[in-house]
Length: 354
Ligand code: IPM
Ligand code: MG
Image (cartoon, rainbow, N blue to C red; front, side):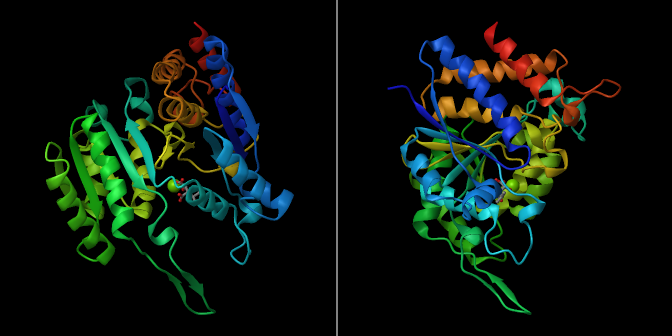
């Protein structure tokens, strides 16, 4: 039977960018003569409004049945009261945990057509090709939380198993690339980082002797990402550091709106989402950049459906459209009117059909 793709548009710009990505997948399905099956579900604020829960049982069920899940974004001012009982973001975290997708692949590659959109000088951006592997279902995101009137606690816990499996994923991926891994931690302060560092040393010595490992403290890594981005190949790190460093790294590519991600676990099933948020300030205005979501759809084809050639065709189509001058406001060239979300999506599909 044709592959089933769960589609969770979510909040803010989510529906607009997901619409464009699904349309690209439809083109690929038609070209293959076997259309994908799509089934939509509720997540985040939209799910809270409809059901009271940010990750309702029907969505959990869809995530179990689907071959892959494509997600837009969650959250917005409507649901961000600090006293609120349920939050959209919690739905996303529950879903990542329920799907067991512990490794989040966030590729950061620069492209000449987007050098002008980056705040960094072009000579720094040339040849940058980084794959961030962010641990996604552990650490401070998932530890015990407590709040009283005048104190609050977020516990950061990691087990050996949680660390080892994501390190192995990074090592395995490095073998398909330049065989270099930078393990990012804060081992000068945190015990979780000291455990992480010793396991990294051990695993790469015994299981990946052909991969070069360096340890970098997270504060230094934040700097090195700007001063020597070209030196990095695979970068592996814990949940929170990975969240922060990838927003920073996205500016190498020109815009946060460009970056896709794939969240993977033990099997082939994955969760695919742009790394950006719901951008409520531009929601519904046809201004969001759909590329991060469309490139996430390409990762979905590659990692969950085994369609690498089709994935590459989407990736090429994205850059063909951008090179052709179809650029949303976040990547627009000075003096040129930006193109809308739908128009950029249409230009990408035209390139895809050509
Ligand atoms: C991301 C986002 C999420 C995260 C939020 C929305 C919970 O920032 O995917 O990077 O922190 O993981
Ligand atoms: Mg983030």
